Image (tube, rainbow, N blue to C red; front, side):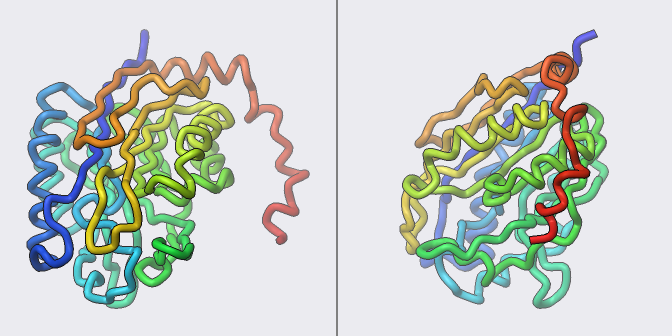
Length: 289
């Protein structure tokens, strides 16, 4: 029997940005802008829904303004509790990337995973934190993740999360596969220029190397006052063959929905048995250096 999953990705531009409201008002506006898209996903029968990196705030990392620390919140906390109600209402798994405060001074780029019955399953904390000038001063805002590469058994599939800059590192992508992930979601905030040519190269390569599906999400628009470039959307789903089978636009707020058969994973791994043929006993140098 086929294991068909219907999944959705939301890519979104900011309704308010710095200078147009308080941090609390900016967060509220962004969250409220997502609600019709979450509702639309639920009404379409989406079973697993993922939003973009730090979905309810701007991508504030081009600056170094400590006031944005105030936008961090506990996970689980108020935002996750509201999303738990949507998950329960629509019998829909929700992956919510959010700015997390574990305690004062302990701040993480995190994604919470909520199961279809509304229960909180756990979280992933972004492991690889960039400090790349100009525009990506993430070490000012985020501690490196300390939860490893967890995989969450949801009602519909085993899912993992790999956030934005993580995608440049094949090691964690492999760890997610070894931990049993069938779908890996990569919520991102990436602009035209430096790494755009990699956007549709790296994740398909991870999908092929590890024999799983990926859902890749990027925000859209230009965010003032930072103006580091255009977030070019282009969210997509890719299968274990490395084929992109559904893609969103570069410019528009959008809910991208696609159906796919998880049985393809077994079929592809029978053709390309990379896990069988790997030689971990020869890879010692990878963790020595």
